[in-house]
Structure formats: C-alpha cells, structure tokens
Length: 401
Image (cartoon, rainbow, N blue to C red; front, side, top):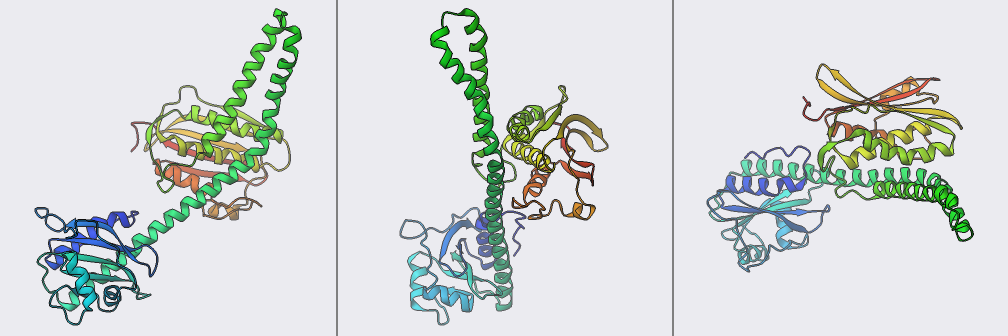
C-alpha cells in the first residue's frame, strides 16, 4: 500500500486517500475513515472513498450517515488490541462488534493504533469482497497508516495553536495602538467641536464658514480613516490556519500607506518621525492584502519600539530591484534605535524569542512566514548603537521565478 504524503496537510488530506488505499490492499470496494479527534476519544467519520472508481463507496443500510464509534464500544476495544475485526467468519470478535458492522452493511474494520500509547487513533471500515491478508503485511500496513494519521492530527493541532498565537500577536499590536489612537482622535474631535460651537453665532459669516467647514470635514475624514484602518486590521482573518488566502495584484505603497496611518499615531505620541521614501512607479506584487497589512504593521511597530525613549526616526523606503533571480519590490524599514546584539541576530525569526518586556515573540516569525508564503525574502541588518533595517523582497507580479 502507498499513501501519498500529505506534506503540511492534516487529517482532511487523508480522509479519502487512506481508506481508499487500505480498501485496495484488502480487496474491498471502499472504505470509511473514522478518527478520534482527541486522544482516546470516540471515533467519528471523516471520509468515505472507493477503492475502485467504477464502484460506489459503501453507504449505511440505514440510509443515513455513518455513526460514531464510541471509545467504550466492544468493537473499539477489540480493534485497539487485535487490529482487525470481521463482520462474518471472525475469530472471537465480540458479537456487538459484528452486529455493528453488519447493520451498516460493512464487512470488516481495521484499527489504527497509536504506536506509543497503544490507543485507537482511528479505524477504516471496509465493504465488499474483503480477502484475508497475511498477518505481517496487515500489521505493517496498519502501523504505517496509524503513523500517518497521527502525524496529520498533530499538524492540525499545530496549525490551530499557531492560529491562536497569531491572534494573540495581533492583539498585542492592537493594544499598542489603542492608547495612541485615542489621543490621536482627540485632535479632530476638538476641531469639530469648536466649529459646532461657533457655527450658530457665526453662521452668517461667509469667511468663517469658508475657512472652518473644510477643516471640520477633513478632520472627520481623518478620524474615520484611523478607525477604519484599526477595525480592518482587528478583523479576524477568515482562515488563520492558511498562510495566504486571496492572492491578487496589490499596490505595496497603498497598503503601506494604510498601515502608516495607524503607526504614525504611535510614533507621534513618542515624538518619533516617520520618513516615507515610496517609489511612485513601484510595480504591483501578487499578494494577500490582509497578510501584507499584518506584515507591514508588525515591522513598523517593531521599528518604533526599537527606539529607546522619545525622539528618533523610522524610515520606510520602497523601490524596484532587479537581481539574479528576477525583479523584486523592495521594502526597507529602518530605525535609529540601539540596534541588536550580534548574538541575538540568528534567533530573531525563532518563535517566542523576544527581548521586549511585552509581546509573545511571534512578530518576526509571523513576518517570515508571510514573506515566504509570497515567495519572497526577509533579512535583518543591525549594528549596535546605529539602528536596524529589515529588508523585505517580494517578486514583481508576473516575474516570480
């Protein structure tokens, strides 16, 4: 039996491949994969597959969906100990197990047992024309299948954990911005309030209306822009487990500008200048816009936080670079902070590594994953006492190698 390696995919990738492969090996028409989502838990249906495309997968005689197999069911206990159970002609299978299989129109069940814990991780239910397999061959098939299933379950759990940690990192960024934005919103509100207070008594003054009405409208637009960008970034991604979702041609300068709107509020509160050197002729890149926003805001906040005390400068520069492996959009974010110790440079992209008193140490790790998912590169150049530059290279749309 050969089951295609699922790479970074989880149980969903095995839902069809695994029961089909085991059904073919056993000479069955089709198979059903049951999986224990929690160690030692009940087995629930996760996939149905036909070993032969000309034959339909097995379906329950009851006409409904396949039921779960309770971890305490005699059939589950038998499979954990013996690895195989037959509906007819078995060698000692519990009657409840044979009845359970027969009622569903199934002929056999194969247990997928965790090698270390000796718990039932899953099972494949078979239908139609099963033939006896040699004990050694069957044991090897089931052990290999159990290992693949357990690896897939671990990948699913890892992705779930990573998604939760990414949400935590986003919340840290939002917490950093909230106080700054609250202060930033006071200024437009003061201008609007002043205009509203003076308007009744100076309504007939065309000079007043001509000067203050545009100011009030501009301040409303500014406050709206700040809130829109903050809410847009705070919005939970539709699928945090996926590295990228919707890829489309994107204007890096425009996305950077949106994140600069948020970051500048934090910078102004600390009297840090942000210098923009954005190339207006920048070509587009193929990108997931939400992931790009997360990337750029992380880099900007890191640069601001790297500056000790008040005053300093962050420089954001974009340009087109042509290198040996193609054309790239280059994004450099530099700060005038104290720099990074040489001993820390190799660990910067390691998850949970941080020298900051707050944060979860996932910012640069998430940035790296986003850049790599877009076939790009990210580097950090730093010199103690002279600041740090983070360099991102993203392939130009249509020019990726």
